[in-house]
Length: 216
Image 1 (cartoon, helix red, strand yellow):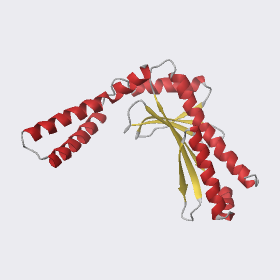
Image 2 (spheres, rainbow, N blue to C red):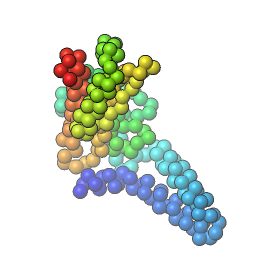
Image 3 (cartoon, rainbow, N blue to C red):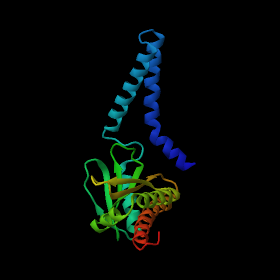
């Protein structure tokens, strides 16, 4: 229940803006100032403009990003993670967790709600891996990527394959979303979200290694 309440509170400004825009559009339609198509267009424009203005105000209500940033950094420190703070003008805050593979990026984008935390890893294929994949038949490469996609879906991580001009996979983008709340289980849920991303990286690396050994 606290989790649902925090989510509702965060999206309350958007709901209020939508209701006000709808009432204005409805009033204009009743007064026969606008036709229905024009009222719909006006509602869309007013809602988008008002939401953009609100998102760019120097306030973050009711949770300040500084509170979210402080607590998440504290949780990472408690877990013994090697954390590097990255300055990114598009983010309220961004941390890179250094691990054995590519770093895990923990970020809160300014275009998103202050409680929306993205956890992502850009897993780059080495030159050797790309050359190896190029030696496989198209059928076997497709089978490998499709099977990997199924495994990633099972653990609940989002993915995106990036291909080069030669049609070969150059990198794999893995990410997961965590919504910050003040619930007693917030820290545990945060750790679980990170573990999903880390696990997805290990799966991708191990499956590629098995492919090279001819086990799949």
